[in-house]
Length: 320
Image 1: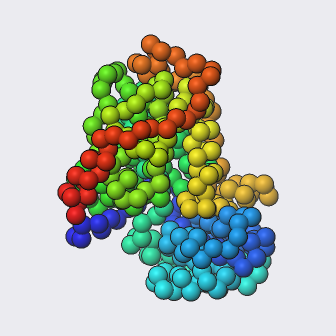
Image 2: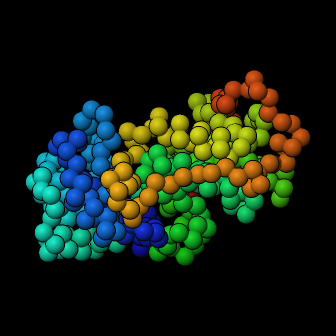
Image 3: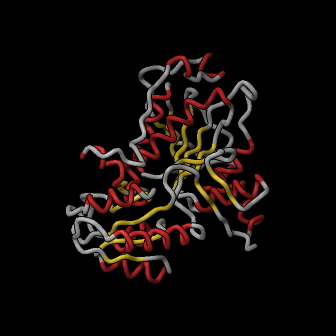
């Protein structure tokens, strides 16, 4: 198996990702979206209100297992990528035989393509589940893609090694959220595995967000032009992640049309994710108990240069 070959199956209601490529983004064929949703297709589209961008179109095609629509550039990109296409005039519905044949081809194509996702680096202990949930809902809600982590049971890969699986999941992630909050298992020391994984993220050029619950601090790894976003409760964490993704949306997000079917009275396969903060599940780290954050602290501070540059260099040498 080639070094970077990854087969990834994300378990959930969506069986495959389809890109609805429209020359007129305001003329969504909702009847067709309903048909595709009923068959378990995640129907993505370009973000509204943006200028045409061939690079963004290519990204949307690349994260899909099929393209349906009337936008010539996207259909051509799909043909070049070898994934199924369906030219769509503004019909009210697709004939059932044509729809079935197309979706079967998309499902076959999905098995050999890596679906889009975000990757989480941070505490995987049970007491941090509410924070992971906040991050996952923020990513799914703003970017339209799931957020996975190393021991997540919602995905399957073709790689047996946990270390190699983690590397490949970082390598192919659309974005990475790394939370550096300390835990009772190691209240005074930074986790070296997180430094390794963050080094991989930087080496692979992933879009990376750093967060932490603790009061302002300077981890042993750092880099000059990065920022760390601090949070107090999981509700704040969700909002901070949403804001960060909004600033990156042209590069990482797409519009999930399934979710908009609810407004027309149709119960979609893929509903809009929501997060409800539960004070009883709130995580309070060991250093947060000692020094509570003041109201005057900025939500983000720049991190100075440090040892992560060495980590990145070593990783690049190790991975070639």
